[in-house]
Length: 221
Image (cartoon, rainbow, N blue to C red; front, side, top):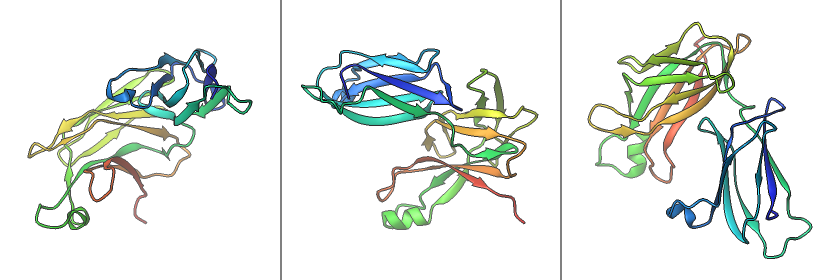
C-alpha cells in the first residue's frame, strides 16, 4: 500500500456510509494503540494519510459485521505497484429466509474424562433460554426485539422484508457457563426458501477456533 490511500465500501453497488475503519500496526494490538480510526463518508470512502513504513492490519466493519479484513505493508520507498485504493462489499452474500426464526444452542463438551477429540465429538447441546435478541435494519435503523424461550427457540414476526443484523448479547447458561455476544447478517425475503436457523456456540477444542456458527435448516419433506 501507499502511505496515503483510500478504503471504499459498497453495499448493493451503492456507497455505504458509517463503516468503521481501523488500522493497527503489528504488535500494537496488545497496547490498544491504533494508527488510524475513522468512518466512511457519504461516498463510502475513508481516506488514510501519512502512515509510517511497516506492517499493519486493516479492519472494516458495519454494525459488528466485517466488511473486510486484511494485512498490508508500507515500504520505506513506495513502488509503482503499491495500491492507492482498496474496495470491499458489505453484506451482499448472506443467507435469505422467509422467516427469521430458529434456536440458540450451546454445545458443551461431554465431561472431562476423554480426549479433547472425544469430548468434542460427544458434546451435549444445551438450549439458551431467556436470551434477549435484537434485529436491526442497518440502513433504516428500525429495531425489533424478542426473547428465546426455555428451549432456546426464537422468532421475529410481522416484520418487513429487508437485510437485518441479528444481535445476541453475551450471557450465562445453567451451570455458570458463559457464551460471547455475536452479530449475524440475515436477509428476510418472501422469495427465499422457508426454514429456520440454528445458532450454536462451541468451545475451542482440538484446533477448532470455537465461537458462534449459523446453520440454515430446511423444513423436513
